[in-house]
Image (cartoon, rainbow, N blue to C red; front, side, top):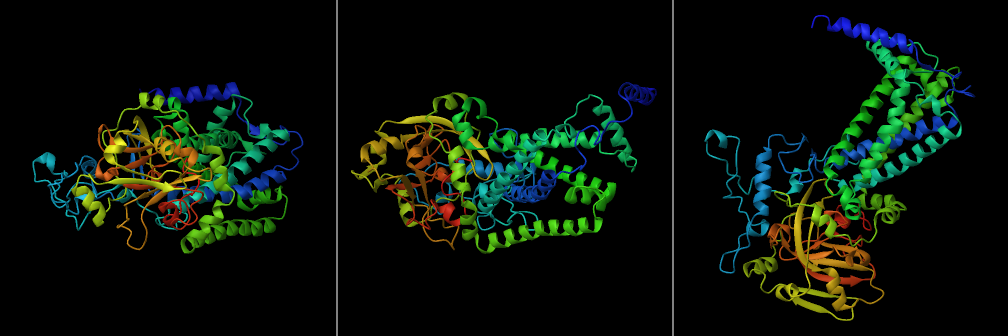
Length: 578
């Protein structure tokens, strides 16, 4: 064992002898590189800074909605490999409380209906929850309703400050808006950069052409570790290899893992993507961290190599250009990017609806065009999926008198009405609904917060209602109204609703579900009826549905944004497919 260090030294010297001691990309290696930084590369630097800051800060805002990361799409509390937020709340308690809400039963008509029952069927005043002391035989904890309330996935959110996230606080909807604009700008900038890199014949300034780059990159790394600068007229091997990896490996990885999180991808290609959302979400996070490490390292090397000289190259194209002018332009460049982010933060927090509508110009229709497509693939995913051990609850059940009365009667007098732009209005009891043709599907539920679970759902395809009510030709949207008064949001008026396009309503996988995992639908998950969509995010799947309305547009419903969360939380109105 004592000879191991000497062995590695000898092996390293042998590699250096085999490949040579220097690997430097110089202007002589690349023809017509009189300017080491041509105009298009300099512009790419300028815009890339802004778009990367947008992506990272808005990405942090998105993470804050569910700062837990898993490798399995079951996303079971306690299996996360990374968790931030309130570490004082044991994960096993999280799991027990969420599971408790899911496993409740409906009260019978002879049982009294408590406030806790309509919170999900579990009285938290008497719910016995596991504690860290249980394994040692001590008495388990009891969580009071006043202190904790019924646990939902929204309680797992840990929104970050505007100093870190864009726009920060509890603004998942606007964080997604800004993220998509960052993606659009970053893709355009990167695409033009790559085209010009190869179109001008300067690709070999980044693309390695010899295996000798690997030992020489290690050589450069050792030199940096000794707080010295490798001698080079251009990029040293470590720089070239790093830039190549960031542009041609890490960047495509981020694009792919971003797209694969879309429920539309799983719905259209279940054989490929039905089990990987949490994996790609985790890889996407690691990719973001890799970008942060690269940026810190890149800036550090710019400073180490001589800040004013390097900025002259980056902004003016030559180390011989005016260093004073380069530093002045650097201040304007960085100051402008910071000013833009500050304005974006303030505008998003002060005028969220105006900011949302501004950011949707062009982008919302683009997302719809790319991800919003009709699909009738159902059976393939059902054959591939197995229901998760439990399913998270999101949102709290209604507390209004109408809903409590229905719960007390076990929904015996619940009626689903269908109207609007239809030739035949309908009013159906639960028994009448259950006599219609039914469908069962096992599919993954994708929440906009980031968590997932798999469950079996049974119910009536919305297509069956469409066949019976005969919507008129002008009907382009289907609105699902509920008895959910959102009592947990006392400052917001109106009942929860969601609108989906007619093409989504006619998909084979769109159900009004009254069954979950072969049992009657739990109260916490929307009893007696909830909407189920395979191709969109969970917030579109309205729970406690009581009325279906066919309309030409939703301008006069709520705030005219296409759903309660679109109205209040600034989500996208036309596309929930990503």
